[in-house]
Image (cartoon, one colour):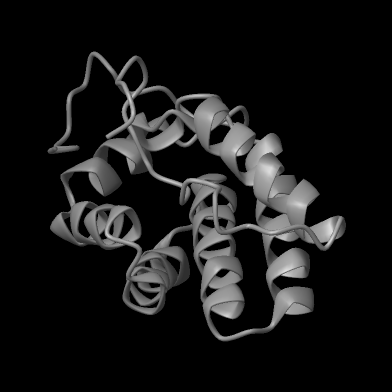
Length: 144
């Protein structure tokens, strides 16, 4: 699935940043990080989002940081660090709650819902093996 720039679908963060959002959507590194996220390659996608985050000056930094924190939360869980997973998932979710529902052309409503399920399970020390991994989708797309 491609997330190439589509100016009709671009919506700014709640605080602005439309011009930078168009630039980010055209950046192949964003597409690569999204694909790595959806492949559950948490470490590599974190690196991709972090590189973009360091270069971004607009409120989109919050979106990128939230995405990379969700990824690092999953990485912590894979490595057996449930507390770290819970903290990073909660921090990422908190950041994404402050972002436009479709920032970077992504369905952040869906991602927030998926991440909330993970956070609730982690907080309850429940089995997470049956939860679907978080994914990044365009709005209106069905899950894979």
